[in-house]
Length: 204
Image (cartoon, rainbow, N blue to C red; front, side):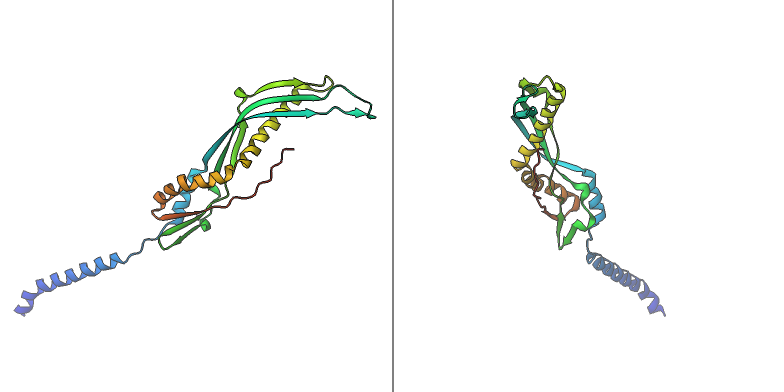
């Protein structure tokens, strides 16, 4: 009995040491699990991320042909206007469109399926846009014709941006700007998957 009493403290120490060792080893085997919902919320908080801005200076000419009667005469001359315009278009990616299913974790790499790049907005710089020449038909509303020309010039800004490859440049800038940010948020290597859709240009 006395022997057991003497050995009891040592048994307690041995059992405690074994418990600490087993607990430590089990902690080492815990796997890190990515919280996709948390990352999704971080991404959505960024909203529409503007990635590129194109500036343009253009000359826009608009002609509105007066109605001709019996191929003999017109009610006044054709309306013509020439604008020297400046404007810009901004390319972005709308991160609020990303769903949880667009986030795929394989090993230590996070694959993110991004929405297609888009033009966030395009507009004329009215302070630097002016009328170079103007000829109007007195039978028609001059202000309406001028406004029509401004709208046409603004649509040309969008067309020029698309023709200049703004969507592809937006995709490339996402790799440069967005990828490091997402890697910091997720703690994983990030691979971005984007798709540039074909856009039909309509200036009607």
